[in-house]
Each structure stands twice: as C-alpha cells, then as structure tokens.
Image 1 (spheres, chains in turn blue, red):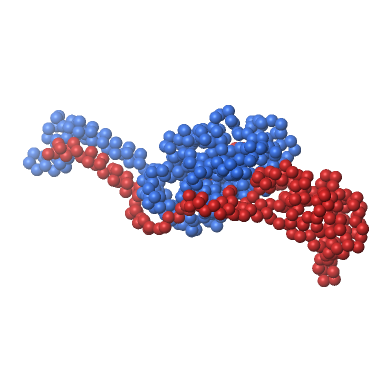
Image 2: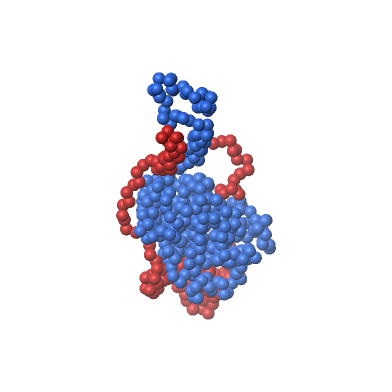
Length: 326
Length: 217
C-alpha cells in the first residue's frame, strides 16, 4: 500500500498505466494520507459502535420494540397502559401457556395501609414466607420471598445476634421471632437513591417499582436498612400450573430478570379490599392489617392500646409497619 | 468529485449504523396491537360510596352430641354413645379435675387448663352444653362467651382483630370476613398453642451453603 500512503513519491498510481484509462475505484482516486487516516479511524469507529451495540442482538430475543420504547408507568396514558398490559398478558400466555390477568390497581382514596405484627404471638413457623412465595409468583428454585424471619435471643433487641437459618420445631427455648419485610417507609431511602425514578411511594403509602423502568442497579437494595428489596438474578422459574394468574402491573406479575422487586402489601389484593396473603396464611393470628386513616380500624386500636414500636426508628425512615407485644 | 466522495463516504456509512442496529435488535416486524377491554379492577370512590357493611363470620364448632368409644361393633363400625346415656342416670362428681381416675369413659384424655374442673365449664346436668361461672347454661356455639369470662384481654383483642387472625376483607365495607373461634386454635382441654415445624425457608444469598461448588455449571 505504499502507493496509497504516499502518493506524491509515486505520481503515477498503479491503476494508471499511462494509457489514459483509469482502472482504480473512484473513491481511491487522488487519495491523500489524511483521507486514508480518516478512513481508517472511521472504519474503527464503525467497528467499535457495532461491538458496542452487539449485546442488543442477544437482547432482541426477549425484548420487543414496544417494550424497548415503553415509557415510565406514571407517564403512560390510559390507552398506552391498556396496550402495555395487553402485551404483558400476551407474553405471559406465550411463556406459560396460561391465561393471566394483569390489572392496574390504583390506591383507594382516603386509605393509608399499615401493618402490625404481634411479636408475643409470632412463633416463626414461616407460613407467611411460603404464602408470599406463592402469591407473588416468586422464583421456585431460590424459594424467593419478600419476608425474612429473624430468630432473636429473648431479653435483647440485637439483630447482630439474630439468625434466619433456624429450622425444625418452633418456637425454640429463649427465642423470639421477628418477621421483616418492606416497611413501606414514609421517608423511603430506597426511593431517594433510585437514579431513574423507577420506584416511588403511592398515595396509600405503598412503595412500588415499575419493573419495566428499573435498570437493576441495586442502589435501592443497598439503601434499604431492612434488607427488604430483592434482586432477580435470573428469569424466575415457576411451573405454569403454579402461576398465580391474579396479577397487577405494580405487584405480582412475573418479573423479568435483572430488576428489583419488593413487598407491595399485596396491592393486587389489598387495593381490592382483600387482606394480604401473608396475613391470611398466619396460623397464629399475629398479623394485623388495615387503614390507619380509619379511626375505627383494628390497626388504630392496636396503636392506641398496645406496646408498639417501629424497627430502626433512629434512622428516621418512618415505617408504616409496627411491631407490638401483648 | 472524487474528493467529496472521499470525505462524506465514512460518515454516510456511519449514518446507516443506527438503522442497522435497530434491524439487528428488532428483526421481526412490530406485532399489531389487538384492542381489548381494560382489565384493571377499579376499586375507588364507587366502592366507598356503597357503604353496605358486610358480615363478620366466626367459624362455629360442631355441637357435642356423642362420645366415641374405644370399641367396634361386629361390622367393624365405630361405637358411639350419647352423652345422656350416662349423664342422665349418674350423679355428677363436681370434684373431678382430670381423667386419671375415670375408668369407663374419657379415659386417657389430656387435661391441662389451669386448676379448672370438668364442671367448671360443662353443665353438670347436660355436659354437652356449657355453663358460665354464674351457673347459666351456654350453648357450644356461644363458647366464646364462656372463655371470655377469664380471658378478658384476649377477648378484647379479638374484638379488635388483634387476636385470632382473619380471612377476607380488611374492611367490612369491601367484603365479608371469616374468623377463627377460640377452640380452632386452642384445644379447650389443653389450650396452650401447639409448637410448629418450619416448612419453608428462603434460599437467598444469606442462606446459601458455604460449600457450594462454583465450578458446576
């Protein structure tokens, strides 16, 4: 290629044999060194760009254009929501060969949901953990669940001494049990740290995630002082017949891999008036759920009459989740 | 002419890259939208306006009618006897406090409920019914009345949903509610809540066994 690189030393190019016929390509005619360098870098640039976008080729397998260009949940018009939900339902049908309903449950006006757990009653049997697992379409392989029960030594409140791996017959001697799930904080640190605003607090107090907007950076998981958020390391594996078909966009629809998920107080149930799945599963009656704005609610009676406290009060997260003793 | 082509050539090529990338990403044509009814359940103002309160239903225990005997008839069927068979003919012993000294019926029955005696709760004349501390008769269906005599704080907590658990709606405005009876969780003769076995544990990263082999695919 010396002819191209240094045309001045060789004025007569290889293609020009002096007979007047020019057999070289027009682009290569009168090539200067500058042009050649430009061409080289441009080629490199194209190659680099192609390499950079090449992961999209694999992403194409599970990403449709509609999903790629989907807007943030709060910016979707009702018509767009309809289309998004229709698409998600069709995808679920294709994947599991099962008809699912994905609703768009909105907060009930005049409602603020709070939860309370009676630690004198809870015996750590873990039925709530299992109910959450089934209700919220969690990955079967990892036994994923939004609830984690800490076994704590009696007479102290020391989470460092707690264990989650206890097994067998409960309650054990000199132990008490502290179920921890999302506390639906009024000052949620997880919402503050989200760089893309994929998680926010709704009017009824529930902190939700738009699974289609989440980029999976896991900042919220790190920010949560209650370890309440979960990351989908892989596509959830659920046998089709075990899928809970009663789903909601912001709640228990099957989440894609690589996004965060969290307890939503079963908003697909509670915003339709039903109790959360973990409460209905509790055999000890330790769990109480209700609307704190209703002065006649069970939850208000507990707050007014029982010894109530919140977890990690000193952090100022203002949980909507209370623990009490008889 | 050749120079111009030389200059814009690579950039023109670059311009095609996004198109190419889009084609690589979404090889299939966008699927057409099928319009369908919005599946969202709207629990909103409309639900609030209809203030028809639903009922709270407490699970009812079965009536006590007979006692099973530890015997079978020639056809292999279980033999039962009505309470009145004996209790109408025999004088009640108000002092009986456990089944230890009984040799004909209720043999081997476990009893661990404070210092109560049988006839503290069972009516001496009709033991299939219950009686309050003041001697008035209570049907088994109303046994919660009887329990509440001593377990006031529990009864009060129960009335406010803080004891005993429930199923159904979190507010009666939205639907019915189903609740346990005292004796659904507490055996009246051995009322302490039983121990349980943990059946389900999450396998999250805090719980993964340390010896897990990372080389296996």
